[in-house]
Length: 215
Image (cartoon, rainbow, N blue to C red):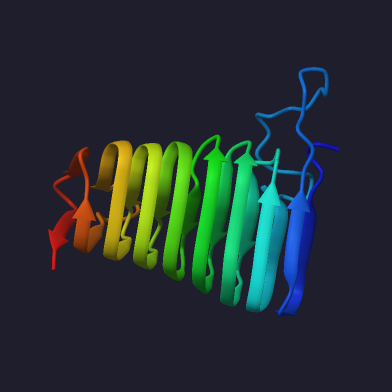
């Protein structure tokens, strides 16, 4: 069914390649697209929970869930993540410590990549057609991004709520707002973004509690 999902939890995934192929919903499917969680409190089509990852490759296509891929409370390294045609977020990473070599996302109904409450090292991203944000970073996340391309997104990178972003190189194309740094939730503080090389024809904006600087 279009809203079917899978969960992998409490284990070790070593040298696996996992492909999730969804089914596009139609107007007669009767799905409630406004419901974020399934009956087990999960938001993803492919859910990975409390799992150690080693040299894993993940891909998802036509995910009709809130997140095509959702990784929670997990750690390790991922060789690549590829997501196409997601109903809402392409990738959602929460409460995790991950090294990811390559992220490719195309055509997301909301954010291409959303991370929170964790430590994330991502060496390459190529994000194309993100209806809201290319990368959303929030809730005390520490993120290192090396080589990044973001095309056709309303917002390129959003950094908020006590998060820290170290950005080596990024190129924005057809992006209205390249980087936004701000404080959204009152239980957190502002954010800090440091970048080395930035190609941007859009807006770079921060609030009084946040910092964006070149190093």
